[in-house]
Amino acid sequence: MLNKDALAAALNGMGDDQEGREAIERLQEQDLVKIDQSILSSLGRTWKNAGFVTAGVLIAAPDEYEDIPESFYASRIGILANESRIEVKGSLEALKTCEIRLPSASEGG
Image (cartoon, rainbow, N blue to C red; front, side):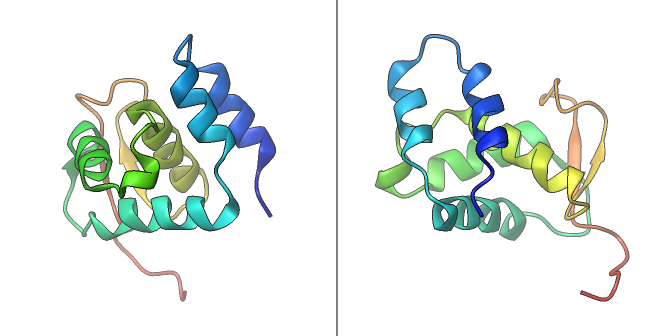
């Protein structure tokens, strides 16, 4: 089910970028799955700079997501971290210094 609270939180951090807000509001559950998969597929077991990951996912995103701002991808990284689907070293508030990776030990699926 689409997490409307998470979307609302992302929208609150958007400021005045109306195109970005509208693009986020149009997202459906399958879009979030695609975005999360893009983030996860860009990671391995070694630490990567979170800012580079968000920028890379943003650049590689299909045209249908072209108006979605980088801050939304950063918020998805936070959600993946909260779900223990990725590990975070540092603060996600500082993407330039924060690092992320896939969990180092599989927990059975």
